[in-house]
Structures are given as C-alpha cells and as structure tokens.
Image (cartoon, rainbow, N blue to C red; front, side, top):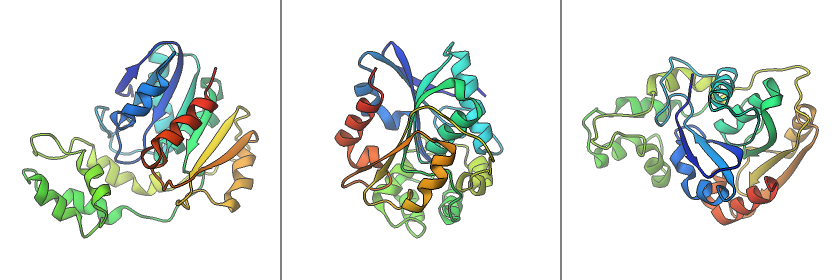
Length: 250
C-alpha cells in the first residue's frame, strides 16, 4: 500500500509516523521546523488521513506499507521518527527492513503488548450518526472519553461537512487488539542509533521495559521530556523539537 504523505523541504530524508487517530498534518509545526535543510515526509498511516483504508492493520503490514512508500519515492534509507502506534510501526520497520532506517526516534511507546483499551471509544465513534453536528458528536463521545482535548483530537477525523468519519473506522475497530499488541520476534535486532523519548507524566515506557528494548535495540538511549504526557510533541513542542533536531543532526 502506498501511503498518503505531506512533504516539506529538501535534502536527507526524515520520515514522521503518527499515532492512533492521528494524521500527517498533526506534525505541521514540527515538520516545518525539521525541514530546514532536510526532506521531511509525514505519512498518513493506513486507515488514517488520506491513506487507503484496509480491513485490518498490524505492525508487520504497517511497516511494509511504509517501506513500499519509501521505495516508491526512490528513498533507499531514511531517518525515522514515530509516536505511539507510529513508534511501534517505526520499530517494526527497523527490525524487518534495517537497511531502510538510519536513525530511529521512538516517542513514548515500547515494543511490548499493552492492556486493551479504546474499545469503548471506537464503539462510541461508530455510533455517532453520519450527519451529526460537531456538538452532538462531541457529546456522544464524552462517556467514553472525558477529556475534551482528546475528543477534539478525535473529532478532527470527521469530514468537514459532518457526513461521517474520514478514517477507516471499521478497519481500526477490527485491529485494536493488534494495535495494542506487539509480536514476539526472537533474535530480531536493529543495530543503528535509537532514541526513546518519554513524557515525564506518561507511563508508556517503564524502567522494567529497558532490558527488553536493549535486546532488540542494543544502541538504545533514553530521554525524558519534563512536563509532557503521552503526546510529547504536542505537550512540549519546543523541547521535543530540540531533542529531534539534536538527534537527527547531520
């Protein structure tokens, strides 16, 4: 599958992969900043943004889609940054096609299986009437997601005319288990530079995860961004951008 992308700048390629319910344009300010002297490609993951819809998603297939997209762009290797679901896809790309990845930044996610979640939210999204106004849709999501900022993020996936969801909601719904999971990959390793960035207020990467991370990514380093939760790049945009610039500096 060839994924939709938003591209900026010229030079050495850097690929940005968003998380669940996100889209490439969420990286707008970060992409513009990183595009000084670089070619920065923000990709819409399958079933998200302007990319094709698929009946199901898992990390091997998402990594294969990213690899196919890069090869279609004539990119033999790139630096890669992924957040959350996109971070897992980026790790899978590095482990299954290491020649395509030069440096890897993983934002607030570990290569582990997480407890089930989002099922109630996806069910609430599916139940929103196709012609619902934004306020009605917001109210329908509130019992499943009490945070209004997260609901606003989710509602950015509605079509502008309110006629329904732009994302492949059925494919996402069928894939929630795989998205929260992580396949066992005995012996898989990526030897290149890797930086795991955590939000100070997030528990997605724990100290007990580090030995397993280093088995797959022996050059892994770890950094925590103060004042940030799971959405590190949105919570502390200046700090995260500075970290990314430093790590990906030519």
